[in-house]
Length: 67
Image (cartoon, rainbow, N blue to C red; front, side, top):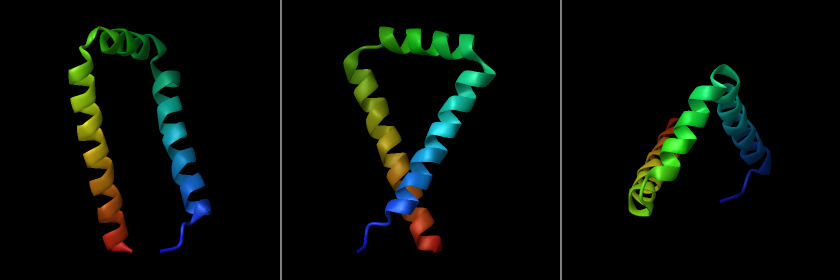
């Protein structure tokens, strides 16, 4: 399997654009979310991180299957 650095950069750029849009549309809302996240226990954050990782891997697998 060859690593496609160009595709990686495009995916990383898209993720940055999506993240930036959230901050541009509602900076105060994002600040509130970050403050609420800071109050959550580490185990809850870890669980959410694991679920997000699983979703991301599933999305990548689905995209790869559609190629």
